[in-house]
Length: 219
Picture 1 (tube, helix red, strand yellow):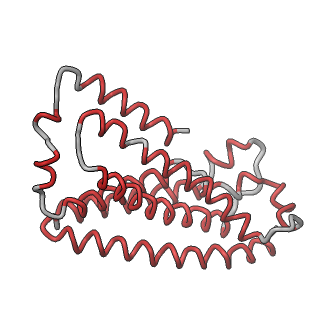
Picture 2: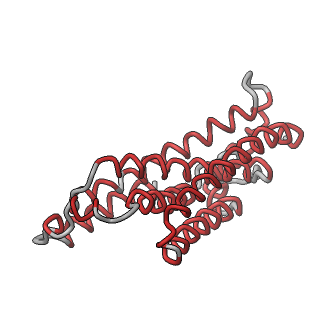
């Protein structure tokens, strides 16, 4: 819910604070197109936004824990546990991705820029969202908090969610730091971050499949 509310709040804040100002008159599409490797900057920023949104909702990082004692029935559902885990992670991925994409709305309210930059942002943020949510579901598969009295405790008192948030914040900080320090090497940074995240996502995918089998022996 927090992840979905943030773009709405930001949209209202931007709209009210910039009333009477026309940024489109100063920041034109021609000016943006004159920036070298502009798409690389957008890609790195999309990684930052995607990693942030991927962690704050805590959907994937508490998905198994929220099952509580009912997690035992995951054994008897005629669907592999890893498939169930990926389905739960998909919910987190969808909500995180949509939350990040909604941030494009306030941008279009104040700026005019080429539509292909939106496409780069959508793809880049999705890569980071997938990676952070796979990490979240993996953590919850390895150390689920299945004993609780109220479902809220499975989220608010679950260290897995905190770990997931810290990782997403760390990734966002790395993206920001690299962009700030190495802005003149933004092409290498963008490609490097993209490759690293794709590789890590694959490794996390494999880890989730193996952790699903391990979970069966724990419940």
